[in-house]
Image 1 (cartoon, rainbow, N blue to C red):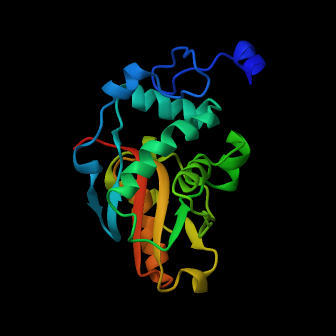
Image 2 (image 1 turned 90 degrees about the vertical axis):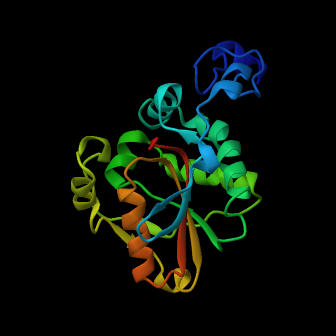
Image 3 (image 1 turned 120 degrees about the horizontal axis):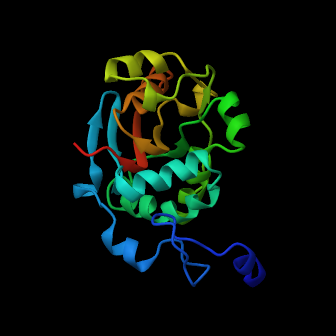
Length: 213
């Protein structure tokens, strides 16, 4: 670990500055200055019982999540996980039966080499002493939601893109989906709708960041 720190000095996941302690993934400066959401970022999205997020998707948080998704900074999941897990503990910890994630398509997985929501879900599950379980598969590659346009266009872009892996497993269950970012909510809405049609009793969502209202 010491040799790795010398070769690849650890950086804060948010400001990207070097940190002295390799076990620290968020520097003290960022920890006190991050754009934390009000009331855990609670928002209601159609077909979703509740969606929470500890941070607003802006400034250093936005840049951090873009590095996480597109610049192979997969280790950031361990920095985000305690924030998301704490948000879950204080809002929906007793309201779900299965912890899962919103998956990427096979094309995106090949391009990135990892599914950022899956990595995050596994890290969050470890914080909560739970075992994550896949419940959805993305069966159609879609255009990136960030460049699609209006909320209506985003809903159209993502419509029919997911399939439930085992309907009998989700029937009557309350599902918590983990994702990295929630902006318009179109993606989690589509996933929740798909799970609801398969018999899920309720769908919740927890993300690292959400768009400020």
